[in-house]
Image 1 (cartoon, rainbow, N blue to C red):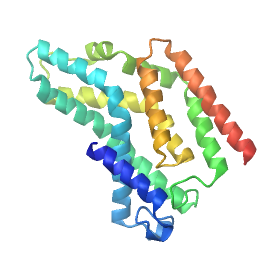
Image 2: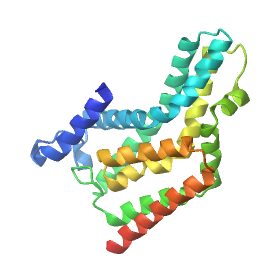
Image 3: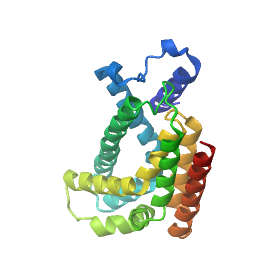
Length: 237
């Protein structure tokens, strides 16, 4: 088991097994947040985003490495920078998620166990995630992610250096962010440390990017499920 997996399982165990008074991770009240608390939350989100998004980025990274190899253009070196740039996008998004978590603690929407205790906000998150699945921005970004070769041929610049590799990786990361940001917010509805939810969201992202089907069909099915889930949550509130 890698470092990322061990960290996630440790934090999940800490949240669910230890007495509340012994928990040292991200306290409920804003006033008790320290630099260390913020850093731990940021580390958690960074690891989660990498663990959830890297599997779906493998086809793009392999295609990029293959094109570099065909041009005898330092494939491993440039691919490393491509992946680092991709992760930079999700690191920046992790900062926003950490700030959002901070604010939700301030509003007392999240319990000390990182579970949403405000049904209205949870249902709103699910409905927003579902509605976004129907938007043209979702489908446009998803099409880029589903066609690695097409994306690279569109933006590839022969003879480009490390900066070119970084640019391509960052651009691919922004496309993935445009595709998946709303789905990631679902973690705030179902529980930030919910490992089952993480696995299911990762699976959904993989299916969206790899199933040989119309992207609109895939997005609409998942969108309807999110909306129905949010409405059910709202009715039960």
